Image 1 (tube, rainbow, N blue to C red):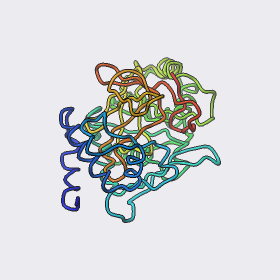
Image 2 (cartoon, rainbow, N blue to C red; image 1 turned 135 degrees about the vertical axis):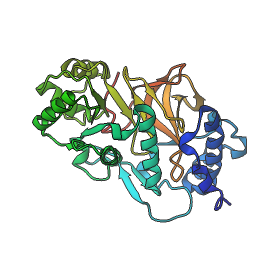
Image 3 (cartoon, rainbow, N blue to C red; image 1 turned 90 degrees about the horizontal axis):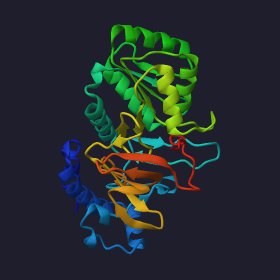
Image 4 (cartoon, rainbow, N blue to C red; image 1 turned 45 degrees about the vertical axis):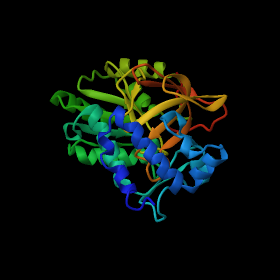
Length: 331
């Protein structure tokens, strides 16, 4: 049924607007209901007739936990280009995202980056991601590696624990007036900031979350206070993404995230997961239309708040949900 039409669902995906997201989302819902056996079974179990799904708020969202226990695939069977796996403590069951078309992921994160920060080749990209570099199949490492290559800057690269070299490189880049992005896991940024006090005027510090038991858990406000004071920046940027998604939201400060146009955050009531709204507090549901070949409608375990201007904040996680390596901060 969708053999000739499903590829059209990707056309113009990364140039959608607020007004065109909903119609495309409903098309992708119909495709995934027909072509994703797991999602179809889940919708049927809820007793929802797909013919009654007319708005974004009618769409059923698949619990993110299914990525730990099932293969979440839409469309014709075939090998995945890559399988991304989530981080986790020893013995924890981790999520697996079977990505059928990894080029779609590339297009998504390059488009989102350019929308938030401009052309990547204007930047020196530095990854401070030791916890992620020490394991394989991280979607975050894949993204940062691709951004590093696309930047073309000779100082772009990833670092493990060589903070002395990183300090020396950042000082040189500052002297050159070079726009620089340091994207780092939380504990590594804290370790670096505690060793080296700097005054960074041309550098963006972006945290991805992730204490992973390495340090005492602190609030996001406490983290940002330490980093801004020690590194001399006005604000701390952040990236919100996860293994089960192929798109990211970015914050330019204060923990306020904004989605690219093909991604949208909604919230649901804890006591009624089908009560979904586009503003206020609740548990976060994510529409990620880049997830055409898995599931574009994900019910996360994150607790958040959507503001009237469409930005959102993440305040923590649902009680008793698994600890995720990329999200151990609380507000």
